[in-house]
Image 1: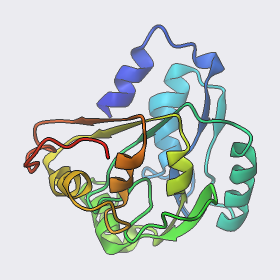
Image 2: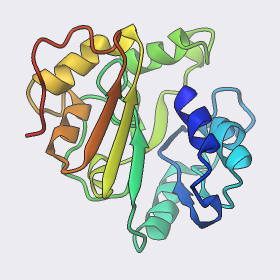
Image 3: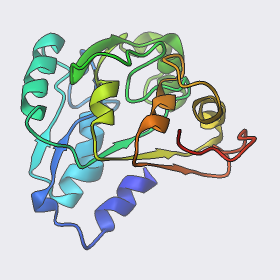
Image 4: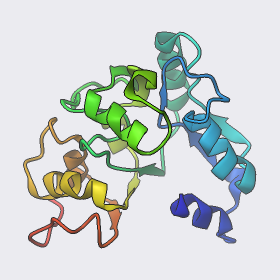
Length: 205
């Protein structure tokens, strides 16, 4: 991912002071699986940047226990910035529609919808949809919104319809990332392709 590649090149960041909490991970996927997000982060961010304080989501353990443990670790720590994306179905992290906008639990066990699972196949992480796990652990919507700042990076044409719905449609659990419009400090980075369906200037509400 170009964003992570550029991030680790930043020379004015003291990575020894960074503490990172994992956003989402599949349930039942070992850490060495090519589609594991903790594997991806370790290879593209943790190791290159030299981050020593990382709280991964261990998808191979009991998911309820993992949610509770991570929630306890995260609770006393204010989050300075959350780095997120928007899924093809409008999901935020693995909060697929209809997303839970109300729960205060920091981490949730969720069931992935077919659109989300097809996206993972389309991105080449799995050969067919039956290989994609049906459940995942994700940081909750309200926990993401507690971050002081949010940076959302959403490239590519396949995200264009989701971007339009989340920026120009109603703020709704059916378009989970639309909730970012309620946050006081969200920065959204689009490219020409992902912004192609926007019909008006969209601003925070």
